[in-house]
Length: 290
Image (cartoon, rainbow, N blue to C red):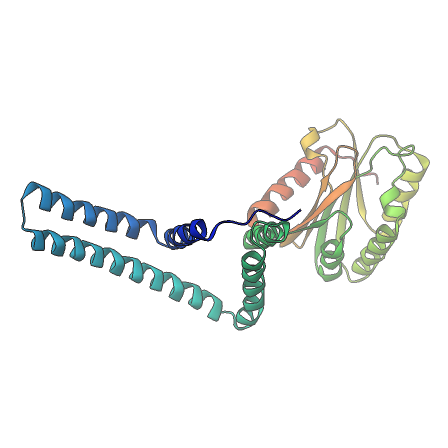
């Protein structure tokens, strides 16, 4: 079955309309408003007889010229501002050009297709992730622990941490027995050997044999361990966090089932203050076995 073909007469009428729509979409609203007001003024002067036909025409042309001039100046300022922002970081010019070019070509070559929609969605994701970075945060998936590892590897003075043991499979501290948990504990031992002071508060449901072994092992290694039974503090303080040297922090965003779904690293002062307050609140009511 062949597709319906638009008659040439109709196509000729549609093309100018499309060009007009494209022109309007790329025109600043202020310029469009100014031109509209200028045309309206010219017609009003001519109809009311307040000015001659030539004077009315000149008034309209003058208003249109001023509107276009203002629009041109505004566009130039935006271009120079963007150019200045990009030029301030040398590598950004090379990085942005293929991203912008590729996105634009994808949208223009395949308009109104899933490819164009995905190009826009990915560009929006870059914008959203950049906003996170702008606020001093890095948000990664629940299986990406590079910032947790890096923070413990680079700390030089002290670590304040909270770890909640989820009541899964009898309540055993399963994360600490995983590959990443064992590696993280190795980094803890290296930090202790460097003279770093580590204080860790464990939130728990049941004091199982597995949990007791974990607590004893960390205490023997030199970690100051605090115990905080669930229900002792508000549920909003059931956090998994680490604060390194008071300058950077990690926080886990948890699912309702106690699984880590996002790893959040932050150097944002508000985040650091909030997490430190939460840690101190829990430390006041936790027990620290001697």
